[in-house]
Amino acid sequence: MKTQYTVAFSMLAGIAVGAVAIQGLHAQSSPKAYVVTEIEVINQEAQNAYIPKVVEVIKSTGGAYLARGGKTVALEADAPKRVTIVVYDSLEKAQASRNSPAWAALSAERSKAIKTRSYVTEGLAN
Image 1 (cartoon, rainbow, N blue to C red):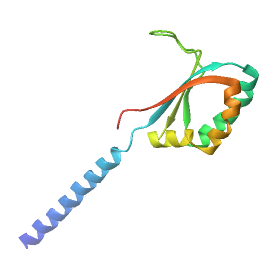
Image 2: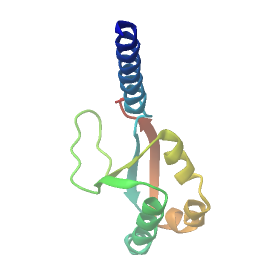
Image 3: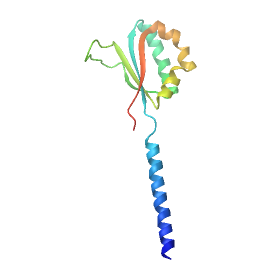
Image 4: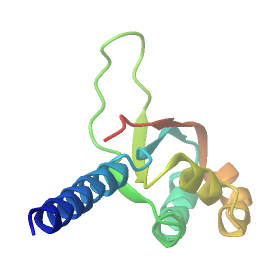
């Protein structure tokens, strides 16, 4: 009888340890990615037409704005005229957004409206 209790307790302990390990693996998901874009407007009218289109592309490819054209203050060197920061669930999703046909379709409009410098960086892992 004692052996049965020992086996049952060992099984329950094994299940608990396995559940904790699986939870830990889920917590180690890939870090979020942040696309930072420095913008200089070269044609305000063209930019006004471009903004709603690019917002839709970013949303449709899984991005969300964290900052979009608010006040920018230089801490070192010169501050860009305008900055946007977009978050994606992963670096791969950010890259896929920028490589998407929808993003490419806006290329001509973008080049008429703005000059940009963009890069993506991974955030810290969970």
